Every structure is written in structure tokens, then in C-alpha cells.
Length: 474
Image (cartoon, rainbow, N blue to C red; front, side, top):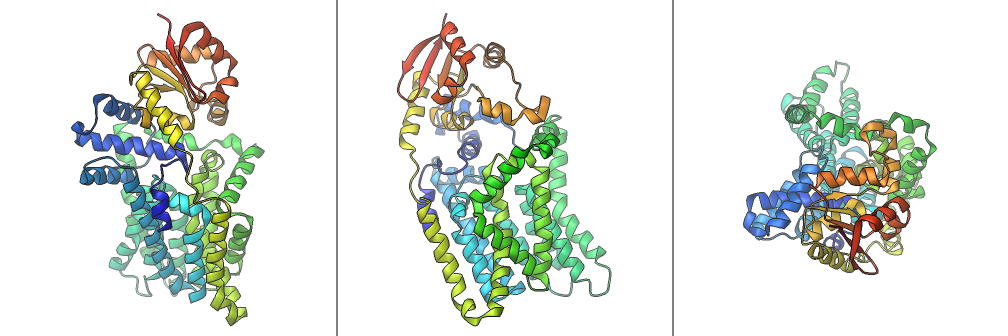
């Protein structure tokens, strides 16, 4: 019920840019099949955004949202967010089942409590991202591995690998957690024989669907491989900011106490499957962070797929502690759940985001520029909320921070040009800009060359305390 309540709020609570990115894609999916559902300018705004955006994974969650809109007869962001919250809850049941096979009842209950009541997970689980579906499939994959048994028939391996294949398709980074876990467990269960046959069957089923998708995307779009490579920058390995950013988002997602407890759990996990899984997952997590080093140090939601690993590790620590005292086994799960819920309340996790004024501003801006596609905008969260609520096409003017963030990518990042050169490029892209919209007033104050350009080339058409609308001089 807590997650449903959060899902009813506007998506300004977590990963705002990424949620509205998915909202625009879902909107385009829906309008493509139901053009009468929206005016032309709104369909155009969604379609143009999809044409501009980098979309590395299959748009499974967004297509699912489009189907929900079609079934409901209208677009409503609350509906897919509720479903994603239910996906997260279902994942917790699979995780509990896996830990009951691998650990003690107390360990399974603590893992479920951490997974379900972690303050970070409340908002992450109902966000309009692929992560909730990916985490559900991750937990189902762990449950499938736990249920494999001693007789590794091809049929059992196929069904165990199927949710792994789904998770990797939905969120390819889950491979860093699931494939090492599968290798560790299948190697452990070899019973004196070679595990290579089982590993080959499991690996083929798990990886082949994504390889087919990747080959298709590369064949259909020659720029696809280059665009998805913008998550890795080798120069970051000698940049202290990379390590600080990664640590900051680990602390934000899990907190130092829980993360330290999870590390301890991986070290003291009882011998058997749970130890094998955790000692495979943690190096996988490190490899994941090193491969996706730009995003893991700048995007907090890149910690979401690590939640099952942290929950399992906490469960392993609980199993170890419960061996020391039967009293601990009785009250530890409830104490963990109560403590995490109290932390969520103290952090204001359930407070509604301040979204009404932003949405009203974006709608007013869309009307002020007549939903023209010939618009450039400097707006919060890469401009995706403005595009969504304002029904705007056009091009986004980046912030100084965003330009600096992507400098390690070199030519693959954002060009660090002056305002006139950037203006020329963006204006040409929209066929000659008629309007320039600013909702990020603080950022405008940090770009004096942009202020000068707006003064020289535009009239101020509309001013409020929160945004500015300029119109190009004729």
C-alpha cells in the first residue's frame, strides 16, 4: 500500500529526467497506435524526442505502459508506476524463496525486510524505469538457481536460465550479477564431474536473446554501438571525483551502516550456495561499476539493480548472527523492517514532491510558445519534464555541469563550444529557432555568454519568478 500511495504522486520524486524520458517514449508508443488520443503537437513532441534520444535497451517497460494506456483508454502515468511497484513486491517473494533454500528462515526474512523496506527502494521501485521489472527478473533468476537441485537436466537449466535472459534483455547490466552467480553455483554443484555442459546450456539461454537484439540494433542503426558506449570513460579511473561520486550514491542508496553490514555478510556467509553466490556477486558489482564508470558515479539509480545483492548479503549476516543466539533469530527480521521504515519516515521518503507548480509552469510555457517545434530550452532534468508536460519538441541547451560531466568521453560527449556556436548548431537543428525558454534561472546566471546572446537576439516575451520565454528578433 505504501508503494501504491507513492505511485499516485507525479514522477518528480526520483531520477526525474530518466522517468520523463520513459514517459515520453511510452507516450509515443501509445500515440503511434492511437493518433486520435492527442493533438498533433503533442504527438510530434513525443515522436521527436524518441528520434533524438539514446535508447540502449528494448523499450519493454515503455511498451507495457503504452498497452496499459490503450486498455485504460487514456494516458495516466500512475498506472504503470503502480504496476512497477507490484513487480518489486513480487521480486521480494522470489528473493525470500531463494534465501530460504540457501540460508536460514531468519536470513530469508531479513533479506526480504531489507529489499522491501530500504528507504531508497520505495521511490526506486515505482519509478518509470526498467529497473523494477529487471529486479523482479533478477530475483526470479536467483530463485530458479536455488531450485535447480542436484540433477541438472537441460530442461531444468533452460527454465532456470529463462528469467536471467529476461533480466539481461531488460537491463543488460544485470549480467554482472547473475552470470557470475550462475557460474559459481553450477561449478559448486559439479559433484566431481565437469560443469561445462551445464554452464554452456545455461549461458546460451541466458545470453543469446540479448546478443540477437544487439546484433539487430547494430544492423539497423550504424551509430548504435557508438552511442551506447558513452557510459565508459577510461580517464575517470585516475579522477578522484569518480570514486567520490560512486561512494556518494552508494551511501545515498544504502547508507554506510547497511552497506558495511552487507559487506560483512558476504565475508561471514555460511558455507554453501549463499556464500558462492555472494562471493560471485560482489566482484560482479565492482566490474559493473568499472565498466559503467561514467554513469555509476553520476546517476544514483544505477544502484537499483544492486539492491538484491545487498539484501542477500544482509540476510547472510543475519543467518550468521542467528547461530549465535536463538533470540536474535526471533526478533532480528522485525527489528530490521521497523528500523528501515523509521529511517524512511525520518528521510521524508513518503512526503509528496513539490510538483504542482512545475507542471503548471510547463503547461503554460507550452501554450506561450504555441507548442512550436522551433524552440530551444534551458531547463531542469535535461528538459524532459518540460517536453512532457509542455508538449514541446525542439532542442535542449545543456548546463555547464552536463558539459563537464561528459568531457571524459571526448568527441562522443557534449561539445564544449561558446554560446554563439552552440546557438547556431541548435537553431539549425530546429529549422531556425523562434523561441528560447529558460526555467533553470540559476544555470542561466552561470552562463554569461548565453545571457548576452539572449539580450542581443531575442525579445523577452514572458517573465515570471520561475521562468522566462524569449522570442527571436525578426
